Length: 190
Ligand code: GAR
Image (cartoon, rainbow, N blue to C red; front, side, top):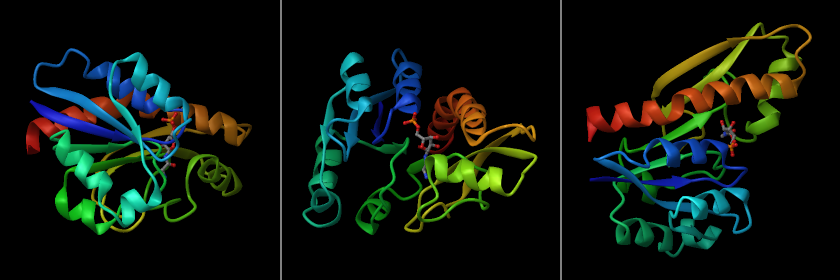
């Protein structure tokens, strides 16, 4: 059985889709939700699905090794970031080489990097009057949004689209594709 940990810190809509997708999968299960925000809505999604949900601090991730200890304790062999905004440290990328994926709400390499998350991305896309946006699923390395791209999907934008409209279009693409891309990647590479 492959065991996924999801890292999330926001509303958790992508995390929820991932939990539901793998609920009855015979060989892949989501066995841990980790969040840096103990009160984030994503914690409740995990509890609803009976998935252990734990929170951690900056020290736990960057200094004292608690996050890595938890991943080992739960025998995690794959990590999916779903709305997790802290930089992933070397201790994790080296323990999980090519086994950490992230979803980003734009067509990387455009609109990536530090500070480019959530509505900041969609406002920048609007500002640039892009005709197309989309989402990117990529492997995680030690730099924000620079790992190998695994999958992208696009959506056309209308001149009248507000950043909120762009966000909704992109989020729909994320929900449609992220769980299946994770599944295919694990099946082909683990
Ligand atoms: C998603 O749109 C995801 O692409 C984005 O955060 C949102 C989380 O939504 N991630 C980033 O911006 C990472 N740089 P959710 O909590 O509803 O899944």
